[in-house]
Length: 314
Image 1 (cartoon, rainbow, N blue to C red):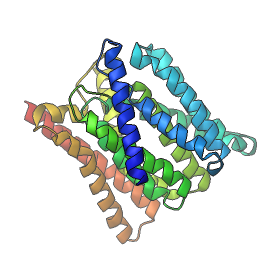
Image 2: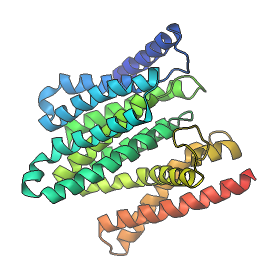
Image 3: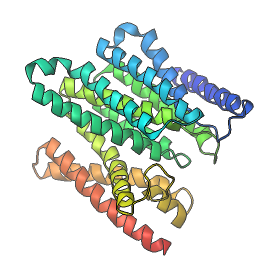
Image 4: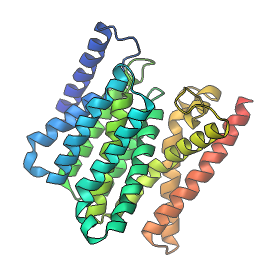
């Protein structure tokens, strides 16, 4: 029953948001639906205030403020420099909120963690933003990642509530996002989702929950895609902030049947999981199996598919 109540509330909110956008005649396709996602989780956290740690609430509150600032990019436009600064602030917030005590004990390790989280903040925000460019692509991305997170935090009931609410949001969003140019997740939504993933990663690190490495099964390929495209454009001396069609799903859209691009992420995730099970069966450590399997499968699958799609295009 709770699922249907949450689904109905989110679905209606998305429709109202879309209609307000159209009514105000903002000069672009309706976007910024991620703000509804933020509000839904924010309401849940503050209605169940005692269920969540102070670190999670502080990080969530500060990221929500940054998301509202980032929302300007959906309404008008933020400069590239402003977006990068906000993404860097996201990394600093996560590090100082969850690992501040480490600075006193081991400042060098704290700096290494800060550097890693800053890189992750930049990569995740832009990866998610790029994957919002096609109908249902961000939905598949969100559902896959939150299913993995549900497994990672299977023993934490409070975190499970946030994850299940996130799944409900993406399911409700899919009933609108499947239509071309109907409503997009938006830059603010991409930024917020990246922040949410970083919170979960930080929580797992603090709890020493090594299952978080399973998130590589869903994130490896999209991040590899973004890194490849950025390097490719730098080599060609193209401005990074201009529109392009180099992403793997964009190539699939242009060369294969409609909706086939949606299978790329699930197929890579399944192959990655199978490789992990295979390596574990050989007696390898689970964490080593996850890292090795995900990187090998994602690299092989990505470049094989890119080669196939580029030749199909020709």
